[in-house]
Amino acid sequence: MGTKDKASNKAQDLKGKVKESVGSATGNDDLRRKGKTDQTKSALKDSGEKVKDAASHVKDAVKGH
Image 1 (tube, rainbow, N blue to C red):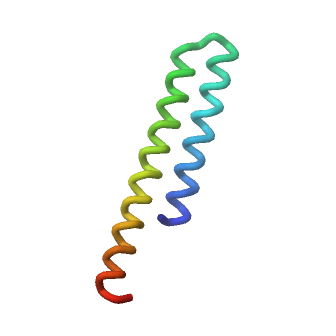
Image 2 (cartoon, rainbow, N blue to C red):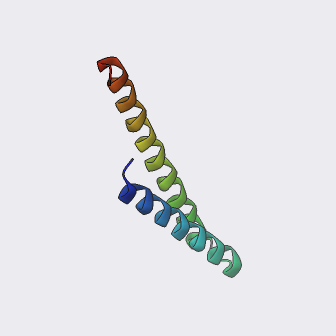
């Protein structure tokens, strides 16, 4: 996974946590849900990148690198 992708995913996760916290503190359920959604999207992107990395490692191992 590239550094840029990691940073982007982390930023989205942190933004989601802030939204969720502010939504909870203010009683704004819509903002809280949007925060949870941002965190979920970040986690899914991160998982996808990890799968790509693992596939690349398997490909390299098969080629003998």
